[in-house]
Image 1 (cartoon, rainbow, N blue to C red):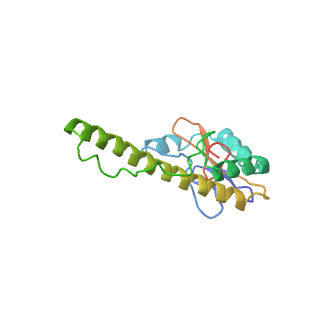
Image 2: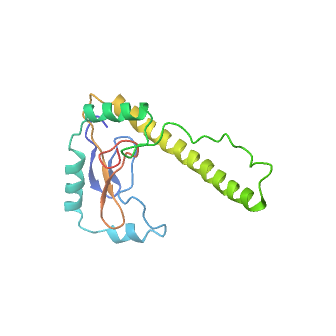
Image 3: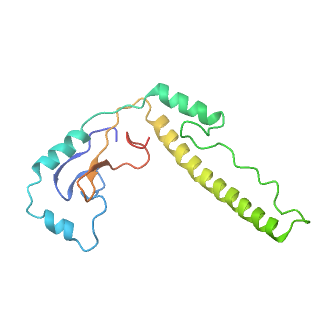
Length: 165
């Protein structure tokens, strides 16, 4: 968000300006957690969430440039996904392979296919985050927060925040 989030004033009033998130990130489906909060004095909790939500953040230009450059150069280091897939040239096991060799080849091939799927997923996630970071590179950013069932606070935006960026 480029403006501070709406202050939390109750369990069902706060966070985004146009979308109402839940105060509790993933509450139990039977509603016990919400019932337990009815009538609870949550003023300090709301003050804390509002203080965090009103804190302005900025994208670090140097870090963004380094991450983009590292990924452009192939990735695979510093926690970045590989830019390319594993080569799957050997689409079939050798014709003269024994049954055990074919089984070993099949398992190895399946590991490569799975790794390529994982790489694709991680690349998509990184490219989305880089795109959002570049879009808001020159803006102040604000993150609305909510809590999990233990009371731990988390930023609500999934694609760019100070925890998982």
